[in-house]
Length: 304
Image 1: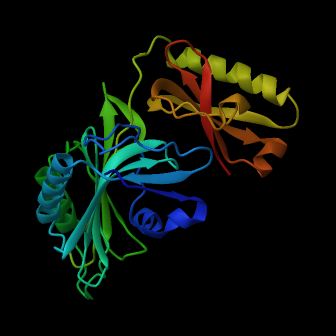
Image 2: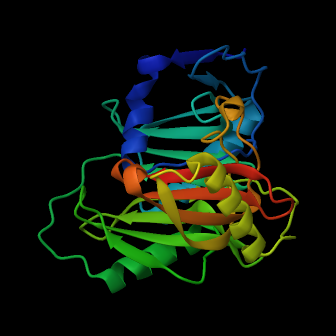
């Protein structure tokens, strides 16, 4: 029999909050395993719906979880919980397994979608360590972890200090057709004792459109938009340049898009402008997403 659990609003923070504190992941891909029943409609507002899996699907999911757990050196618990999740917060679905100790403590969580592993995070208390984690050692450990889980390894690793845990975070940015995908990455967090704390993949679906207009044309379009907005008043701007990226259309400049379902990422020229005059008191940088195929404004970003 199918069993569903619906968590809404602040009541859903619990475990989800613990995971988010370790690593932030978003993905619009469908999950691979099959629920034992239909997913309930989450209705309006954010909600997390958990549905039991069929017997065969649960067994396969637990086997995948065990492989990832052992590959990353995560602890083995007494029990495991497995379910299919419809995440109304991030508008996505995935399969999830929790590794639970005899006393009920959640030791680790793994999540899988249609492309494979999307998240593995260790939640047990780290061991005390006075040793200084060398960057070269952390990068090597992260590379081995990614290879053991079968995720694609990017050409360039960037390591940075994790000021919260005292360890290091190693990232590989995603590119497609030689163009960076804004925000997508493989991310591995290393504890100060050298153990893997988490591994995640942020991997969005991409639309079919490709570059048709030049960067110069994109800058012209951006300048026209900014001229219209500023009205050539005391609040003016300086164009900093334009880079080609895969971006997610958003509603920052279009109220009709706000609250709509996430769209596939599209190739766009990211035209960056620095406000001057009165506007500079409230805004440091402004980015316009100019669709690289048709020149339309599909969103943007700001830096306060």
